[in-house]
Image (cartoon, rainbow, N blue to C red; front, top):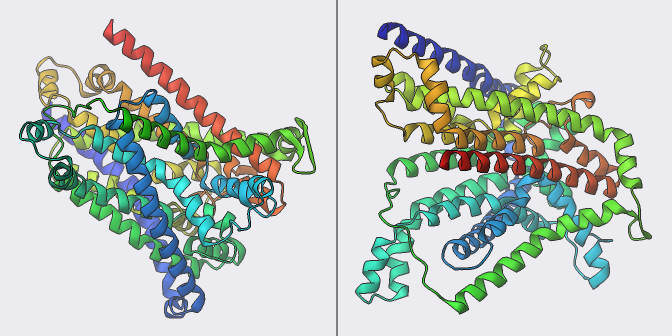
Length: 530
């Protein structure tokens, strides 16, 4: 019986490894092999490439520093003060994660463009296009991710050492130098590299507000979609792999060597009126800046023609729906629900096989399961276009579902891996003693114990599939195009009102899904408590 279970587990691992071979490694190898017939040296030495690379490094580096600093301040306000409505602030700070990066860029155009709302109202002398616009848009797009990572780090900082330091009369400044900074060093490195990778591989914000300030992702997008130059696109894609792989390796090694996860006592927060007032004001300012683009989307959606005719109308919504937005929304919902259902099932099964068993096969499957963290969406999309081009999958909803599932697989997998790894290691042995099969154990024991994690995994897959533009940009056809991709088409036609409505529509769908899942989890928690 035990031999059959081991053989079945090994067979499942082999099937999953084969899936990742065809869904991740072979497409990537196909893209890299495409460089063999390309003048790599000529591309890398061209002035256009040097300029785009320099622009990418400067704008991404600047945006990363600002984003991480802002994220740390806000995470510190939430965890180290007694301000009110902390949960509401956290929801507000993560709103930018629910709309595509291209919407952030267009939001800045609507606000600060040559005929922007704030440009006209405040008579601003500067333009949003170029370096400054990319930095501002990238900060809006990326800081929620850094905020959530730093919030998790600060939330679980052990307070025992700080209590001892207070008893010994050690000053606050010395506590920061001796306790906080050493604790933050390794997690902060991971946050910085993760944020930098997110920004440097994004083409949505630079495409909207970059102007002549071209970055590598925009150059890659233009070469592949505009000129159909897959060779040069592959070279640029390989370059974009470098920071992503570096971030992946740094995150992997810092997590492996970071043993600061054990919390004896949560850090207590002493009363401090001045601190709380400062934190509240900072949260208000950040909240207003986050809501400005969303408010601009609302304004443009419901006015007849900004700034000529400011009368209220539903005409913009009807016009956008007439141009196929409803069909594209259905495509996005099909993709998002399919990715969420299939992705959650596959990632949970994979996590169970790796977290609940030991051996070389489990270690190898775990490693290949997290490799998608090191592949930017644009690179994955281009590799799929080359590998699956001409096959029965090309241009179908199926390939969009597959690429999104692979693109977002690693994070939900790690959620399940961590949750399953925390459960009692003797559960399987007890099940074998009682004659309970493995499938029944998973359904009756493990799934109920990790139900909250499963909903979080479903939400992650769904939300990201609704808003992504990177992995699907080279793969969709007109009839299978997701809703997020028509923003670029509307921008070319200068239909700002339609862009605003589509951005709000994506935000509304993601907020609705988040709300439904939060309600389900709350009800489940009440039942368990009862």
